[in-house]
Length: 146
Image (cartoon, rainbow, N blue to C red; front, side, top):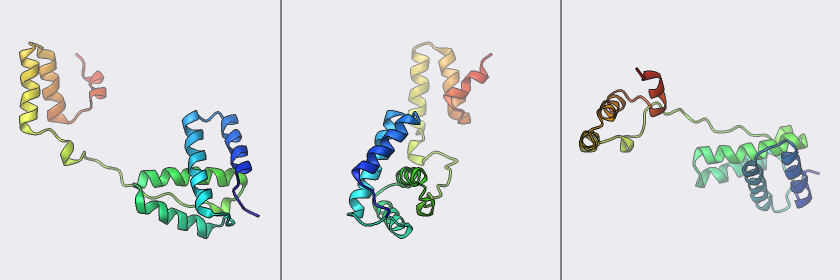
């Protein structure tokens, strides 16, 4: 009989701790499983219900959050050997470009350059020009030294 109760959740929690998962991961997985268990209301776990729960979670959460919940449940199902209950995560397309609202306006760009100039920091001034004109990340700047 495939039911999720507090005893099973506690055993799974101890398993995660033994596997040296971070405290945040253990708390997140246990919280997700508790929500799933409450939603089940004592019903036996099967793939149809897991898919139904996935649809419910998709209604109010971002795709990454949905995938996080699915990962928690799939991890539990692996632990229990309930491999037939596993469900696929959502496909998330990689964003190549930043959102338009995260881009600097020309006024903001000019203010950044003016601030660097007013501080008489020529290096910062040119660094800001390089970052803003190429889109290079600050962390990638270490390769541009010299």
